[in-house]
Each structure stands twice: as C-alpha cells, then as structure tokens.
Image (cartoon, rainbow, N blue to C red; front, side, top):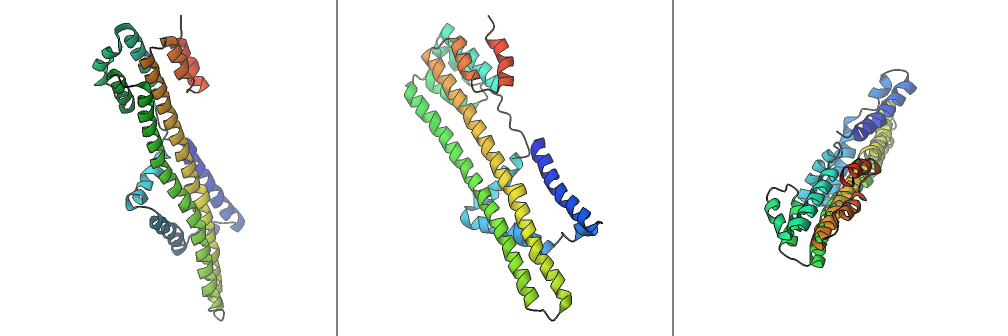
Length: 263
C-alpha cells in the first residue's frame, strides 16, 4: 500500500472535518457539510461529462488506474540488473546463442522480447527502434488516463459552480419563503466546496501520481533496452553493470555495487 496516498487523503479530508467541527463548536458543523444532491451533482455529473470526452472503455478504465495510486509499484530494478549481468556473463563466455535456452523461463516479457531479437541476430538499431516504440506506445496509453483525470479535475469545480447557480436560482425564486433561503444558500456553497475537494484532493493528485509511476516504468524499460543492446555489443560485464546502475536511486545503487562490482 502507498502510505503517501492514504495519509494524504486522510489528512486533507481530516483537516476539512476538523475545521468544520471546530468552527461550529460541535458535530453539527460536520453534518452541515453533508448534502447528497450536491455530492451527486459534483461527483457523478462531472464524471458523466468526462465520459463525453472519452471512449467507453477508457472512462471505465480510469477506476483501475485510480486503484493503482493506492499501491507502490514494484519494478524489481535490482533483480533486472542482476539478470542482465548474468546474461552478459553467459553471452561473453558461451556466445549470444547460448541465451536462447534462458528465454523461456524469463518472466520479464519486455526483456525476453529484446533478447529474442538479439539471439535472432537483429540489427541493434532495429532492436532499439522496436523496443522504444513499445515504450512510447505504453506512455501514450498512460497519457490518455492522465488526461482523463485532469479533465475530471477541471469539470468538478465547474459542476460545483453549477450547483451554486442552482442554489441561488432556487433562493431568488422563492424569497418570500424565508425558510428556504438557508437550505438553498447552503447547497449553493457546499457544491463549490465539493468541487474543490474532488479536483484538488483526489483527482488531480491521482493524475500526478500515475504520471510519476508511468515515468518510473518507462525509465526501467529504457534500462532494459540499454542492457540488451550492451549484451549484443559484447560490452564488458562490469561496464554493463555500471551503466545499468545509473538508473537506480543512490540507496539501491550502493547495495548493488557492493555485490556486482566487487573485485
């Protein structure tokens, strides 16, 4: 679980709840912020607006993407480097064709695809083009979801303003009934609050987190590409290891250096 996502959401909404209770002096302040029609207008209304701008499968797929913001993706960078270093040692010792026996048991599909091209004798420039094309297309698919979330983040405050207008219209249309002024004004303001919360506490931050995860995944795949091409070129295994570890965070790099670069 990604504690940053969970603590961030709990903290942000907790501060809103704390402020509502503190300013009212009781739990009544919190209940005043609960308005189902306002919530439905902002959340469902803005989501349906997002559906207008996207394909059906993309609109539904965003919920799976949101789920990923609550988990920390594990790309097993260290294991990937160790595997590439082992392949490099075997290729330099026995030749590139010796790697063919290892490919069937390789879990990393992207690495397997690259090494298969190496074993088949494909030109290095072609291998790079094919693998980088796959990375680019992956990022394009991710960008569609990021854009959807940002569209949602823009639509939520707009629907909050719609709720404000509805509340004001209802209030102004029935000024003689003084008992309706308060509820209508409350709806007018609460929908604005809901729109701001949905956009700035949930949807926009989710988009930013997913974009970071996508960048990290693309970086790991770029690392695999460099490793595959270094194996094909017959680079010294020590040089290969140093090249790959440049993609790691310093804390991970230090541990791996002690293992792979020992004399």
